[in-house]
Image (tube, rainbow, N blue to C red; front, side, top):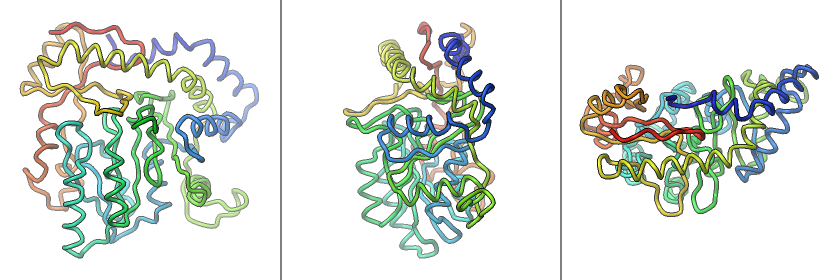
Length: 360
């Protein structure tokens, strides 16, 4: 059994994907070819935003968002401590300071109550200028954007949605990737919508941001690639990856249904044995991972291994515990919910072609 069965997906889409790749090989426009523009249009339509700008990977997507929002040294950017390293890394990369926030015990996402406390404490301390919030759609479930947006507006902060895991999720029909001022996603192969390499995208309804993103991703270009009007980066999506994503995006709604069926099956099997992930009313999860909580994680994972069922831990170390952020001075116990999750969560296989494992 595969944790994420990319081979089964490819066999299902083989003829369409092979044809798309062959078209790119025939026309030879390997960088920023026509499939890139086609993908950007279809991504924007699916998410429900004016602009989708592709880039080389999900981390670059977040970096581009930071650049557009002019995040700089002396700024504070608030983000969850229970997340992948890239969420906080891009803040520090711009010279700003990540201010970590505890998790919501029920959803595992950023806790809006703790978020406001951290913002107030940062303002009271007076050393940093609160600039933005990065909320993460952890394990496929959109964060509580109705509440987070209220907080962002109250303290005049920009809001970035890290939808790398949440693509396909929604709140009351509004899709992940459409929340906040800017949203980002990753097309890493293991993501709900993934390519066969690295890739990413940025979403926004802001015309000015969109133009800046298009410039920043190609060395800060102006009227052409030899007219450089700002310092940018080299972050373009390969045309072949765009071609693959076009066929995967077409199939994605069906895969999303299958993921939710798999999650419902898991819930029926495991709700009496573990703490299972809960989806609030009005929310839809894309189930990037199906994550359980157990007081005996190692023992439970060992039982699944004996049956040939792979499991994974996302994430065993919080951001405030990472060596790279040790100088920020956080202590054990500063984020009790997140720290407990890091010790007790593990994930079962989840994809759109799953054969359900039996309970152990």
